[in-house]
Image 1 (cartoon, each protein chain N blue to C red):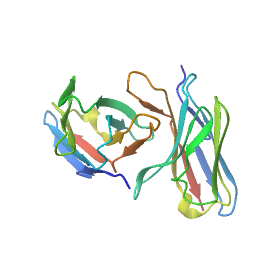
Image 2 (tube, chains in turn cyan, orange):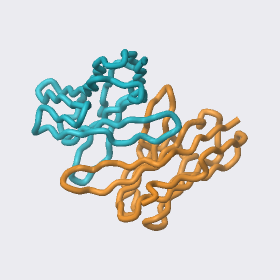
Image 3 (cartoon, rainbow over the protein chains, first blue to last red):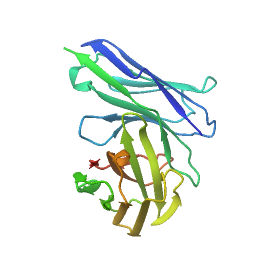
Image 4 (spheres, each protein chain N blue to C red):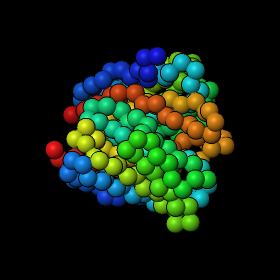
Length: 113
Length: 115
């Protein structure tokens, strides 16, 4: 089973703080690492994604840091806001003829005002 | 575009009944995925299709589950007979490949409760 392990399961952060969620993967053939955001009652939606040829990608307050040798990647949310409260999923994907994603178990983020 | 459309949004049924979940992918997307989400097991891939052909059904829990994609704009996931442990939120997602990125677009999900 090619797994993606995600931690922590839940995270509480104060408004304005930094939220950090970590993931580790096993399959070295993965070539695509997205993060999805899910609000209650909604389906997951792509937040930001990275490919293994770069070590960092930033989009607004959201940054992915990628460590290929350690097979780890993380999501950093700067200046966290109450509206960021959601469940976050990391995933790994392998292109070629197989475009499915393997998801982590998710992290429930709560940002207190 | 209306996004991925799923119906029904909520389904309550009794154990032993047949349940059919429906999905309309985004037009032009050639991959379709069915997922099941529970607190205990997270987001599990059940089956996915490419150009209407099932590619990998290794995530289908057992023979009670079946999925079809008769054309590019419609797919069904059927559970027969249903059991209480099938209670979950079922998501359909569609995708197309561009520039090495294969973002999956999820529908709103169907919340299934089997009593």
